[in-house]
Amino acid sequence: MKQKLIDRFCRYVKIDTQSDPESFTFPSSEKQFNLANILAEELKSLGLSDVTVDKFCYVMATVASNSSKESPKIGLIAHLDTSPSLPGKDVKPLVIENYRGGDHIINESLGVVLRESECPELKNCIGHTLITSDGTTLLGADDKAGITAIMTAIEYLVKKPDIIHGEIKIAFTPDEEIGQGADHFDLKKFGADFAYTVDGGFTGELNKETFSADAAIIEVIGRDIHPGTAKGIMVNSIRAMAEIVRRLPLEMAPESTDGYQPFIHPTSAQGDVSSSLIKLILRDFKTEGLKKQKQILEAIIKEVKELFPDTEIRLTITETYRNMADELAKYPHVTERLWKAVKESGVEPFWKPIRGGTDGSRLTAMGLPTPNLFTGSGNHHSRSEWCSVDSMEKLVDCIVNLVKV
Ligand SMILES: [Zn+2]
Figure 1 (cartoon, protein in one colour):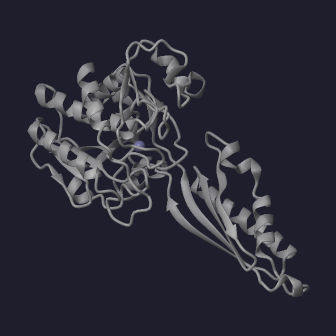
Figure 2 (cartoon, rainbow, N blue to C red; figure 1 turned 90 degrees about the horizontal axis):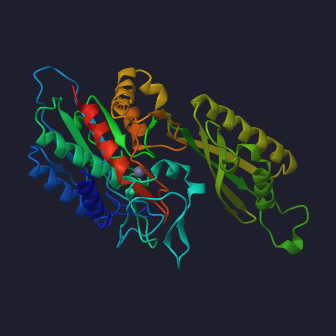
Figure 3 (tube, rainbow, N blue to C red; figure 1 turned 60 degrees about the horizontal axis):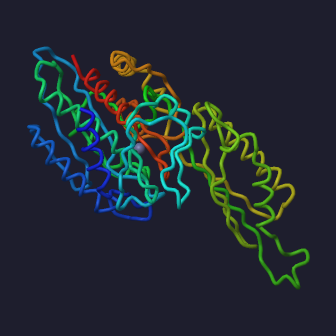
């Protein structure tokens, strides 16, 4: 199976499917159809019946049940696109046989090194077959490792009809990397009772918790006038904006927090004398905590308003996504099943909170409980992105156990 995984994975990563955050179309880039259509053909040739690629580039298919028992319809989901943060064209996968541990130079002239210190999981990969890019592009293991594992598991099940399973629903989705992967997901057509995204990190890592997220905008309105005659008249919004940014709690910054700690993160600040704008993202695993973050911002604004009484300061907060844990807790069998399937594959499972969101958080909120499962890869969105073929092999096993009756 190992060679099959290498061949399939290398074939998929060579297809450029980068999504485009600047685009106003859906999918954000036409080229995502290139992989979507290939996957649809492969699913058809495996004998799956209702294989479709819709106009939004969602690939969907069903593996028919071979069980006489009534069993739930389980969904498997991975995303087609790769991150816009680095080039995704002309990916040249390099296969490293028998990884010896320690640092591995990927591209000497560009200084791209796979560093054990930055990726402690590598310690568990000694003897594995690893794959990286040549350092000029990302690899795209996020999430083509997930697609490869799902496709290989399906092929395995089709060829082994003695493994009894219920109906399995497959979806490959576009534009996950720009946060739009669930936008046009047709839940009714998909028809699964619950699902799993295969889009996670290292071997054994499972995710059922994400941040709850809001976006905040603070507008500061001042008054501009010729500086030569400004005394007592000019109100410089930049000064008030700077005071607001200075007062944001440093101990609640993304650069000083991890694990379950929340953060308030200013992502951009711009302005001139007459008006300034600060954009922030608010993150907390407890949705309640976002209210506290709002109060922190309101208190800062009140203080700054006292310093600059002639400014007008407006705060607007909008909801981005919510922690899927609260909703998933209503369906304990979904996460228990995942834990059991991974354990049965001889992999030690562990739950890890995601300091971000997944398509699963949106899908769970839309009514399809969807925790996340590892892909056996690391350093996503970077030139030193890598995946372990040995871990992918385990992942195929986990998927098969997951859908078995
Ligand atoms: Zn991903």
